[in-house]
Length: 126
Image (cartoon, rainbow, N blue to C red; front, side):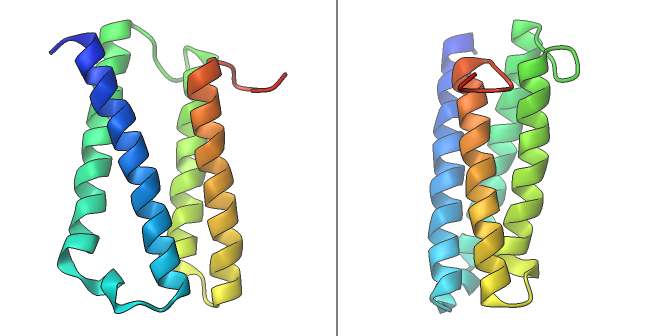
């Protein structure tokens, strides 16, 4: 597979992952039963697995790796924050207010990851 095709798959999965997270967050805030649908529980795992796999293949094919390249390290750490915040936003937050707070943190982490990816700078805007 070409580098460009792999990059397109990765970017598409980034967008699908973010949009899916936002949709699930809206449903969580609205107490929607749609969150329990089998497809809603399965699709994020498929998208995120494809996203992670494409990220690994992109790193290998470009020769750029987290903990070697600062901007990729920043993306990796931002991803860890996004996962933790997202988990508390959608499942582990005890109250809706706590979930909403973590939703905000997760969206900030997502925006940070994208800004680092676009600028290749761990401190975007500087």
